[in-house]
Length: 458
Image 1: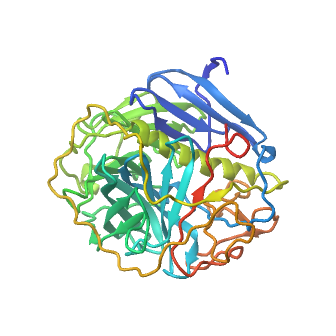
Image 2: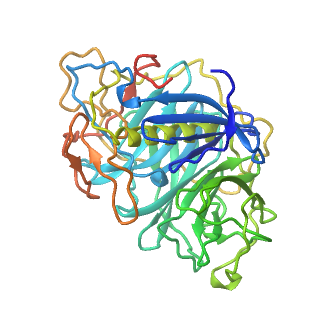
Image 3: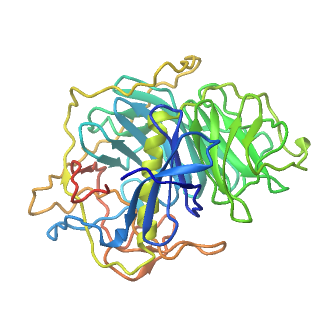
């Protein structure tokens, strides 16, 4: 579509991601029900955005419906529990907390791998991650050491509602899956030193390569910034700030841009802002900044974080995942008129001729500590399922997709989930199985169909 430059839009459920150049970024959101927009922004100081894509009435979008296949659903409970924990080859792997407990693991945590190479939106998930984080998580922040190999090391740091944190060394596998090699394998967890810090329910995670950040609300309503670099330390630190600061907003979106943290927020008066934070200097930039009355002595302060923030392609994939989450949330605003499912297929044992994700000339992080590869001991062989099977297995792998939400939740009201094609809401309870699908007895892996204009967003 031709360039359409408009003032910065107001979104209540925004997503942010830097582009492949790590200079510009995308803003994704919905101005009204049933409209999803994607905007391109040249820099954080811009006062206008370029509307590059808009989809109307996503409820009635074209989908390929395969009635003979069972409909399985996985709900990504929150974008705060969708942690990028590994980057290997063309694949980005996340630790995800879902709404359904796996019978074989008694956990709602799963590994999800997204692969956008080779002309297809490939999605895999594996419920077996060896060690399983808290069943009552507050947020999860992923960190990783970039790798051009088939395996990547990283961490998933999970903070729970009791203000405890644990770091899980993560081994990501981007090649093949079997009884000993899974998508995401956690090692034995390490307790996080909270350093006197108490996170609120409004805290927001930000992945920045080997360093993870958490934005949280201070007592005076401004924004606090915390950091943790798991391959160097198990301590959560407060990043010192200088000068005016950003007013915290519960619907704030954040991402990584060059060596800074990028945010989008809407002021109480309804004005949207882009702001950036430099974790080295501790300085916020952009409009709408305010002074802070929050005392530096009210929580722990540590030295400035010197780790480089890497955005680029990885940030873009985070926004795509966020946009998918938002898209299905908006679908629940209306009665569902149709159900759809993409075709299923199997993961090939070897992936050849794949392009390697380039991170440009960004500085490399020192290998001061790389966790040893975990050694999973699961004896179950992952099951495969082909889309052309007319008689699907009762243990067929599940289609990874957020289900629709009900009306946007407000403070004190949990979002409602809907069974695909049904009008009855389901309020999931952590630790209980989903009412609409039978869990498989062994870890499974799901492969979505290649990109097809009939069953993918444009």
